[in-house]
Image (tube, rainbow, N blue to C red; front, side):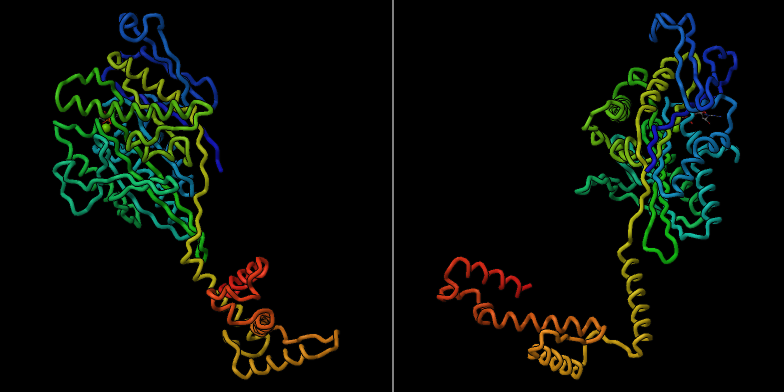
Length: 471
Ligand code: ADP
Ligand code: MG
């Protein structure tokens, strides 16, 4: 088991004009942490933020400033999580920030240059490279891609659909089993045996995601997308399977409703994101509090799906994406504040190992056959399940002789054969049962009026014997 708090990172999106500099500074004050200081310009200080404070300081594991490239982000953030997933632990990386701050760029990447590939394609590439290298295990890899919009889940990887609207995609619903495990009904798990297949699936999902987005619903800014890599591995000949899930999550824009402030459709949508991110925040607050037994995961689909990633069996990492110009100071501060709360959450990742009963049976059958062969070699005779008629008669003779022998020193020797030993026990048991009570009263439960069986003790004994016989 690995206990770890959620790791938090910040990434600042490149700004068009560098003159915005001076709004923040990055400090490397410790080896394992950096700090981001956001400086509120004077002309804003008496506005909506806080008219007393001029700067805010936040700690992160590491801060990726404007120049940071995708490969560096992958190396520091995603590679360690991918490694854990390969070893059998669950992992989650989620990007949180306002619309336009670089969540999709960080998680999926930009389409223009190959070097702009984001965490998902790089992680797939890395995982398949590692799987190729490791010949000691048999790996199976599946991917799934879920979009949650207005509390509804949609399967982005359904191959039968050429969706033109999000609503055309298969609807995914949540089911909870008696052990409170979450299952996603209708979400397809597509097998990907190599990097190319996995990338094609990612492309299919992203295409569905884009096509389904119209200016009216702007789904990408208001929906959560969860790309999951499912890895299972086992050593050849072993019945133990390790399973892990790696969620790569692009959350909805975290901006407040007030900013969206339009009537009709847009407002409902804005309310919804706000609501589901609000529920995420509530879960995080509840988790950060000590002694809270109830965590409100069930309030939204997204928190239900990510339940293990938050305070559960998972190694989780958050990337706070920031678009740090003057207009966005309040949103950036609120993103950083959210991250600081997230950093308090402790997760406990365990190795997800299970035994496959089918494989276990195959394995046990093999062991039995080997033992039988070995036995045949040692005794020089092939053994079947049952004793032959001849052997049975011989045995009965030996038992009878033993029972009738008055010599207290006499022994019953049938050799080292479990079948014969069992037969002796059965024989003697039958004999005892027969002499103790008449057979007919044992077999017919209706006869209770018998004088013999009328006393409570007798009844009790009779019951016990009946049970024994039934057994
Ligand atoms: P979000 O998903 O948070 O709404 P996007 O990832 O779509 O934001 O980013 C908005 C725009 O900024 C996109 O055009 C994207 O290509 C660009 N962008 C974001 N982050 C970076 C970055 N680190 N480097 C270059 N361009 C970026
Ligand atoms: Mg986006």
